[in-house]
Amino acid sequence: MPLDSPASTRETDRPPASRRAAVGGPLLLAALILLALNLRSPITSVAPLLNPLQADLDLSETTVGVLTSLPVLCLGLFAFVAPGLGRRYSLRALLTLSLVVLTVGALVRAGTSPVALFVGTVLVAAPIGIANVLIPGLIKRRFPDSVPRVSAFYSSALTFGAAGGPAVAVPLADATGSSWRTPLLILVVPLSVLTAVVVLLALRREPPAAPAPPPAPGSRKGLWRERLAWQVTVFFGAQALLSYTVFGWLPTIWQDRGLSATSAGLALSLCNAVGVVGAWILAAAGKRLPDQRPAGVTVAVLTACGLLGVVLGPKALLWPSVAVLGLGLGAGFALALSLFALRSPDAPTTAALSAMGQGIGYLIGVLGPLGAGALHDVTGAWTLPLTVLLLACAVQITVAFSAGRARTVGALGK
View (cartoon, rainbow, N blue to C red):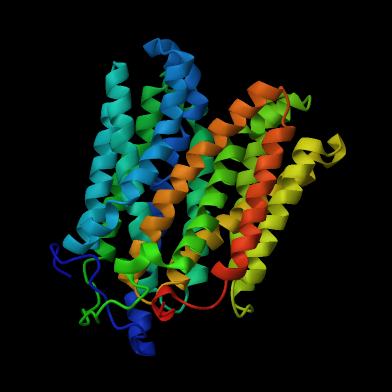
């Protein structure tokens, strides 16, 4: 595909079998996995380096709080920009440019002033927010018969990147003798350059375009009036709120239960690691289910049970509870991502639904850790934050009965 062709150019909705094998090959799958590894680690790797970063730049606690919330806010805001860019430029160009901006952002973020830190953080998070939206459409278009399986590959790599970056950030700081700048650069620049090369190779030949039909009643132009689109969005938003709250506060909850800081770090790593397993279980089970309603209910129930065990359960059940929680969150995230493609009739609508769901969903996700911290400060306990999180699980169960039905926004005719 020419570099200036629109990313929303699509092939026929149901390509013949011989063509399906050609449009989504191993190199493209490798590109998806590398992209996923780039889309979380640059953000999550900052957390274990916050103390030296704060001391080096003389930042207040409030400033640090804004810094940690800024990436998630950017993920939500820049998600709304992605479909418009996708209609004007090729996916190859957009993803490559996103990786370039990500690299530049990492270099700026390693500057010597708070201004450079905040500008660099925006430059890191903005392209991630755009790529987040474009990739589900790519999966829909290039892997039309394997959406749940490929989404599981992709979400597993996202989870691995989210967990792997923080795990190696401090050892890299110790090995390089740099408090925070060099580790953050090492974790971003080499991988993003490699990924850009693989993306350019994997997307050098796009499938031939098919004339786009007139917009269906549920297509991207009327998406914001579609009940199903809002149900998918609410499911993703609840998942984002649950995930970011757990990732932000699980170590603190763990230590409040009387365990060590080392154990708290291991608990978060276990939660992320089991999340990868959850994504794969979802992919395997999805082949045998007529729709996603059972999966939607199951992931919410697992998440609720894990939360109850972590906050209120006996200490003997803390580790099993973290495993159950990770299973629910990991499978829930994979399901939320796959719904964008499964509930859309074509790749352009997938990108539009992804923008709507992730744009609103990540903005909801910002409220999770902020709200949980505020409620804990007021009450001095985790019972009220737990109640709110359980309500989010109940919301997931409720919308799963509609969002999980085997239908698409373009087929509703409303």
